Image (cartoon, rainbow, N blue to C red; front, side, top):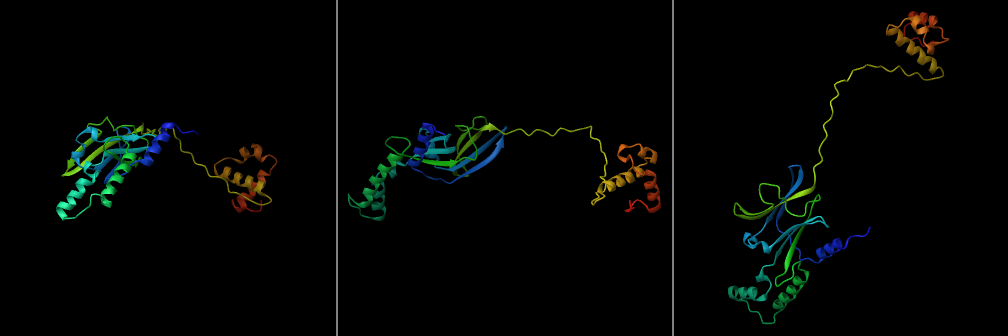
Length: 245
């Protein structure tokens, strides 16, 4: 099967991304006939005050939840970090130190892997979903699909997703009010050379026990040609366990 070019591009982009993994929780539940997922992500609320500073969506090609945001600007240049280390800890760095060069090389690498092209590179968090979800956050709940809050002082990003398909309805079992209880006891199984005769004898004994008369039994085709009177005499003489028949 040939995969679509969009799917290939999505997977290629995912390989080159600047990945990060925040502290998070993924909770699965059901509501309003759909499977749902609630994500809780640890984040600094001040970084998400502007909607242009983050992206949240479902990658339908890879079936992953995606959360993207830009790197802190202070991480992209050696000046803020080296100034801090020099001022606070009296560390000395040359203008062309290996640490300063590392910042420059890292910034180029981040820019190359950034999903958003611009002055500031972006990082991506991905999480595989347990079932196919709609492309955007859920929009059929009292709260918004994306909520930024402080829970007891902890900066928390809440994202709720909704499955593409409804939960299958369970069909109720139809009650049958016309059930009739019957009782049946299968005849004893007889083996050996005389098994056919033995089966007829057992059937004869059960018919007699049920109240059927000898004359009625004689009229049954299955007993045609058999000595019913002799069988009845032996039954009365030796009981129903007469193995000599």
